[in-house]
Structure formats: structure tokens, C-alpha cells
Amino acid sequence: MLLKTDIIIDKKIALRVFDKTEVCYFNENVLTEIEAPVKISGGVLQCTKVGAFTYFNVNNYIRYVKSIGRFCAFGPDVMVGVANHPIQSLTAHNIFPDWDSDWTKDFQSYYLDNKSNIDEIRNSQRKEMMKKNDVSIGNDVWIGARAIILRGVRIGDGAVIGAGAVVTKDVEPYAVVGGNPAKIIKYRFSSDVIKKLEEIQWWKYGPDILKGCDVTKISETIDTIKRRIEAGFKCYKSPSIIIKNNCVKILKNDI
Image 1 (cartoon, helix red, strand yellow):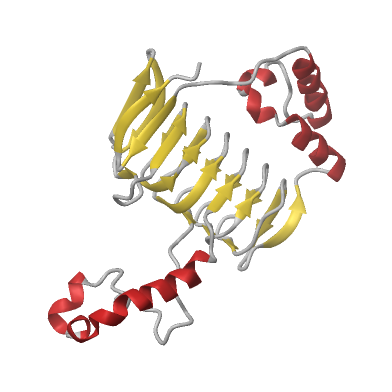
Image 2: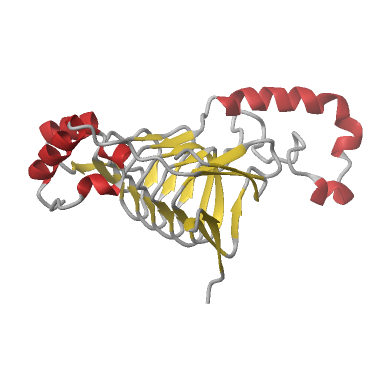
């Protein structure tokens, strides 16, 4: 049985975290802001901001992510923003710039005789690596089981990433992609419907804007949402949980 921890704000479950979960940037001075409610079912999450109603299935490994929008669904064993190694150097191994070498030092003298060059090697490799930016994921995105998303990729609102896909480049809004490397299979809706969805951005208003709607009837639902927005339906606001190095530091109530 998986153990879980609930973070409660105003007697409401704002964040549900199951065991074997790390929410941190590996001791870097980076904060993670999680907008309630969110569920994380294990794995590693390095992301500066996660939107409300997003959930992560078991064993996700998510790194170098700038933002994840609202209403996103991550299948099991998803990998996002996995680390890169420099390939323009003689070797791509990370012990030579001394990124991770403690476990080798008893078996080689490379660092004893090469200390003056380490900073130069690091700076040169850092320039190569900085070309690969963080990942950003839009709203209402579904990422299937065992999908891999490389660094520097932007996933548009409403996109679907097929199970096992390897995403190497940006994905357009409401595109369905799959394969290795991932390619567009189709779009979820017509270009006219996609344009309307991008205009109304229903996720700004939370689930309640869909009360009474049959979400399988797209055009009718869009018309209802537009009328409610024009009538003054308020944007969704909720508490945000601020986490640093796997520890909750601040609770900020935006309501």
C-alpha cells in the first residue's frame, strides 16, 4: 500500500503526495510553486511552477521544467527534461569536467594533474549545454506512459503525447504526437475549434465553468463557456504551496 501525505489548507486537501516522491532542485536555490490542488504519485519533480488540477502518475522523472500548466495528466514512467551530456568534447563522460566524480577519485589521478584545466573545460561545456533550454508544458496536456520529452521542448496547450513517444521538438497546441522521434498523428479538433479554445482558455476558470456542460459536445460547450466569461465568470484562484529542497517552506493564499 502506498503511503501518502496530504497538505491541508483551510481544511481542504491542497496537495496529495505519495511516498517515494522528491520535489526539489537537488539542493539548488530554486523554489517550486504548486497551485492547489495537485497530486504527485511518486518520482522526481523539478519544476518552478505547477498548475492546479494537474496529476502525476507513478514513477515520473521530471527535470529542468520551467512550468507545467493546469489540468495536465502524466502517465506512469514519464521522463521529461532528462540531463544532457556534451558531445562536442573528446568524451561525453561527466567526470572530466568534475560534474560527478567523487566515486572515481580513488582509481585515477586525472584531477591531481589537471586542476588548472577543469574550470576551462566546465565553462566550455556549459556553453554547449546552455543552448538547450528548460521544458515548458501548457495546459490540458496529456502525456502517455513511458513518454520521453527532451530538454528545450515546448508543449502547447491541449496537446497529447502518445505512450512511448520520444519528443525532440516543440509540439503545437492540440496536436496528437507519437513515435520515435515523435511526429504529428493528427489534431484533436479542427483549426476553427482550436482557435476558439485558444481564445477562451477555459482552464483559467477552473472546473466550475463547465457545470452542466456535456464536454463531449465541443461546439456547444465552447459557446456556453464564452457566454459565462462574457457574463463575468471569475478566474479560478487557489492557495499556492511553495517548496524548497523537498521541504514546504511557505503557504501563500491567493484566494
